[in-house]
Length: 194
Image (cartoon, rainbow, N blue to C red; front, side):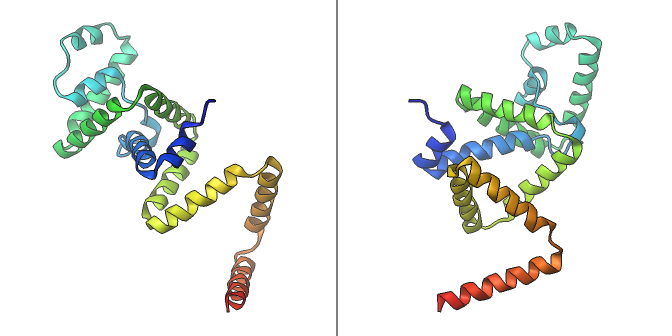
């Protein structure tokens, strides 16, 4: 029986799953200081730069690049050289961690990266903002969200659709009405807890 690796990691223990998640996030965010429109996974020559001195065949491979590829490589080389040594060191370490991942995990990360690249600038910006908010959550809040997500994954398609419709209705309410409903919810909850 084939199992979803993410659910297997979830059952096996959080540390392994979190390490993989952190590695994926680190890989995606490795280029975060760069303009959003220019984020893409490192290419082999860029990775050789990240490792330190290029392999002897790197110069030969650069000679075989098309003019557009040479220009892109030169731009990336210049960006790399503009990074401070600490950032270069951090990027090398991220790359080394990425290389140590199992092939299927690296493939999944690259696939996620390609999906990220297909997003519009607005979607990328929103995703980065959600990631920043996630990082600022406490461990307890993150755990609650993970549990809710697991419950959501176990819902039937009909239940998921109902939940989405309720969320849309909630979001369409004026902020004052939402606040009023929140207050009433917490008052009712507190009354029941007594």
